[in-house]
Length: 451
Image 1 (cartoon, rainbow, N blue to C red):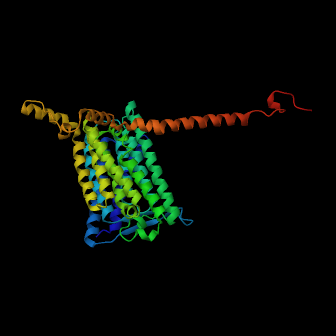
Image 2: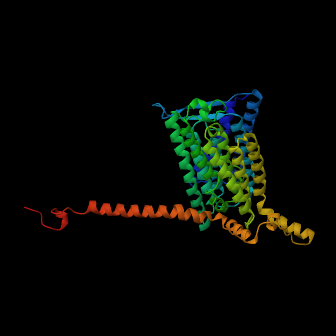
Image 3: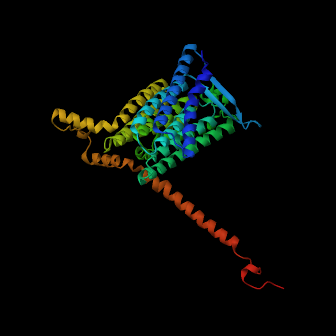
């Protein structure tokens, strides 16, 4: 029987090799043809899915405990070198198998959906980059591997939002998405640095290894709270929780298959999975759990209102996904870990089907209306008969403007930041002028030097 270690390496290596092959072909301006690109993508995702599903079966049947696979270290000439480590348990292998199964379905759908698209090869290179990053996040054994995977997921997401770069809207939306992701990445990096400083190691087996393992780090209450809060902020940025939800409708500028795998199935749930892995750490910090629960509940309420007033299918599905993500985060904050994971799996599969069938929604609706001979009109909701009209108008306006999140962030963060950088640039020019000004009595000041 193939060893569990080898199966995991094949599962992670297949999309990584695909990313390297397609990326290199694009860099040297020798992209593969559609037929070869589609076949390689399908084969790579199928091999990865088969390997990780088999690894999960082997893990369950052999009742193997938590395993830490280490493959040496980079920069290991001194203590604290960066090691390549993977942490295997039931949760990580289940999420990795789910991710590759969904990725395989999306790869098969994309090969036909993007037929004759000029960026066909570029799409699959970014897609392979995303799957590689997501598997690194799922199976990471230390913060270095986790951060690399986190960056791969964020960068590929932003680049796929700007996939149709011949139009200004996707590029502008991608910059907004990338800016929010920078906040999330900064919080993740801060948590990693603090963990190294406090625990003397970046190994996640000490924190995410299950019951009884978190105490081995001997974190103080303040340190545990600081690391947990930073993780919650990182998750909020990546999963679109309030107040970072403004980027979600902008991300719908990308191709429909990428929207399905990123913002319906996997990417938006990566933060929820990270919170599940960090459950032992969250249990040491009441403040972090309260923050996560509050953000999850507020996001669910906001997204429920926003999804009811969207004028396009993809935006409506995006906010519907965000509603469920908020509920999943709330379940994790309440300690309902098994319920949260089952909710995550079911919701990811359901949203995948909805996003992939979104282009046919209007066609199906017209077919139903033609069959019954009249147009479908939704009935009035029960809350409309209870809430006063002026309150309904305010709620409708806030939902229609998506909570004014973009305007609030622009005024509270973006504008002050630009003003600060402009002032610093002026100060820099002023100081440079002083330094470069000629000293009196020298040949450069225009006066005759002293004899």
